[in-house]
Amino acid sequence: TGQPAEDFLPTATREVLKDFLQTQGIAEPKMMLMARHRVEGDSTELVFNIFAEDYPDEALFEALIHRVQWFLPRHYVVTVVPKKPEFTENLKAL
Image (cartoon, rainbow, N blue to C red; front, top):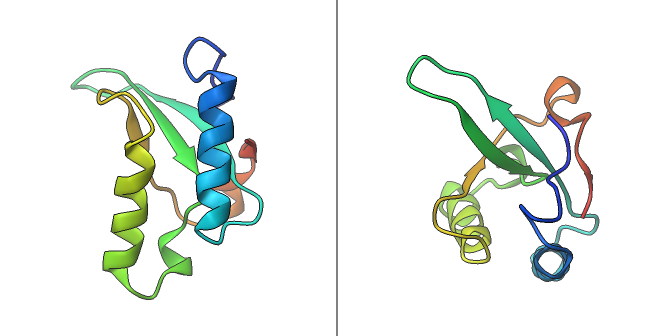
């Protein structure tokens, strides 16, 4: 895990995402880039501090994740992690 490079996620995009997430009630938006090595192939995924545990309505949660993807190239993957320190310790402010 780490932070995405400028050429992967430019500052302007980060600012737009930050503003959007703040309007959605996430006071301090954070993210990280996660690389996964799997049998079917490697992947690079963005993780934000958007947690299913914070949304009692699953449809609202899924809609928010979908709207975040509007700001990103189609081939970028946004993944969700549980709200646990071992998964969130590398999230950094947008």
